[in-house]
Image 1 (cartoon, rainbow, N blue to C red):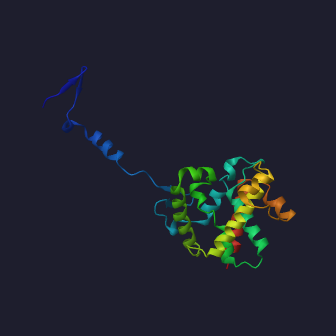
Image 2 (image 1 turned 60 degrees about the horizontal axis):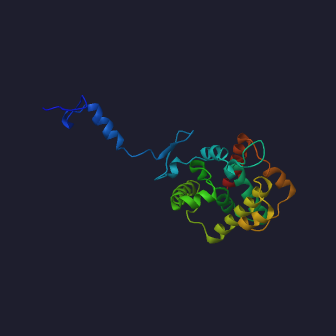
Length: 225
């Protein structure tokens, strides 16, 4: 078998390549990993998430460590998605005290997918397009099934979630993220009312352990039926 020489180095024909080289070539064609291992031991597939791999403890742990506003907030700790979730649910409850617990649970879990994909700021979502939203939608569907919530929520519930979410964003923006009132109104609507007690509590960033604990406590109460 002829060996071709180039610049004093032999080039081996394809059929003389080592088995190791072939294995490396095959490995390079393997699809990239699309699942994340959770502390519970679950492996959640982002392309095809199973409700059986969703655990509330993983959600609480993750959301308590995901920063809102890309971490650009005042205080000794990040303002976590877990704390934002509690604020949103509290505002919805303040506005409509008679809310059914299932609806409250749907409001409570509205950002739950972010325990896997993080809280991407709105400007970056606009840059990358629909791929983020498609992944978020798949994950949220699995989460809803896992906890007995309809995959598609009634329009009234969706509006309620959006209203409470925007109200919470206004308060976070003006109290923690450096927005002026006029700028916040432009993006999030008019200033919402919030009792002084709730404002002191929910708008003071908590340590991750406190956010995780309070998230789990509230979920347990809402899921009790």
